[in-house]
Amino acid sequence: MADFKDRLLAEKIVENIKKLASGKKFRFCHICGTHEYSITRHGLRSMLPENVEVVAGPGCPVCITPAAELDKAIKLANEGVILATFGDVVRVPGSSSSLAEARANGALVKIVYGPADAVDLAKNHPDKDVVFFATGFETTAPTTASVILSEPPKNFSSLVVHRTIPPAMEFMVGVGEHRFDGFIAPGHVSTIIGTKPYELFPRTYQMPTVVAGFEPTDVLMSILMLIKQIRDKDYKVENEYTRLVTEEGNPKALAAMDRAFETVGDNWRGIGRIPDSALHIREEYSDYDANKKYDIDIGKVQELDPKCSCHLVIVGKLYPKDCTMFAKACTPQRPRGPCMVSNEGTCSIAYRYGRD
Amino acid sequence: MCVAVPAEVLEIEGSIATIDYGGVKRKANIDFLEDVKVGDYVVVHVGFAIQKLDREDAQETLALWKKILDEE
Ligand code: SF4
Image (cartoon, rainbow over all chains, first blue to last red; front, side, top):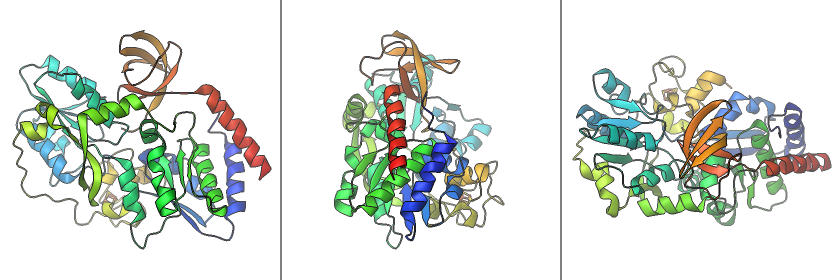
């Protein structure tokens, strides 16, 4: 089997990067928690020359889930529904508490592997309402769509907080003084959406864009491809991850997403509203929309702890080590901000795998 | 939660396949894919197979890279 972890191959790619990049500064942005994991876990930043920087954009779905939505989930759990969600969501702080705290106080919060398990919970507990708290990007959204379209039992509904990546990338292009020279686009999101939605970036913004996989050689190769595009002034969307990503993506998954959801503008935690970046359940399926089914009154929202700098970390303006609470007041055991919880959160990854 | 893992298809029954992640067996929904066969490798995310893994393409990619790197 092919080896994309090959150390020698990685070194060879780095050699090429050093040669091509010499004398210039490059700053690339990825939008994917799994890329951040791979980069930090394998120490890729220290392999790269100093003039080539890679920063993390808002690619951790749990981190960008607005406090207000967490507050709603907590409220529903406290009011007696079975709240089902992914494992890395439960410890994320909302305005003043987390789902884990609600659970400790007796609320029914269940960790599920995926949305189908939440539907099974509803089938097995016909006397209870089950709400699936659905976070995630385009990789996850079709799976929620699929269960909504599958005529689940009426005691099932979903609080959908799905967000989409290309609008967040467009937001990153506009993060003012903070210039990037190119995008490393997320591999798994792209298995669903394909490479076409990124064409806007080279065309409109002269931003080279390479869709990349997750092994160290994938990430390094994508950086080399970006630098080459810049050298040749030939800006385009390239696909480094052809073993999984096609131009069209996954048509069936896209169709399910389109049938169940409409695209609207909505909030990202620490960022604010991004136009056309959220998926909401279509009117036809409002029976399964927890927002319509329940009157959820959550009171005042505190988006982030005033001392937490997640809003700067997720747009690449600050490295976790530069937050005054990092590894002191804020640790994975006692997270003070959303970026310290999920395995895809930049602070949690930095805490566990590297402080570079 | 975004970590999608490749797994081998062992058995198929309608929309549901039994898959093997290096020894651990699980069920996965295969509705999003066309003609999945036993023995295929699929990438599974939160209980759904989202894409087939093209092993030949993986080999070709590596061969191509090696060529590019030697030329530069
Ligand atoms: S270290 Fe903690 S407090 Fe600081 S930015 Fe990260 S999550 Fe927020």
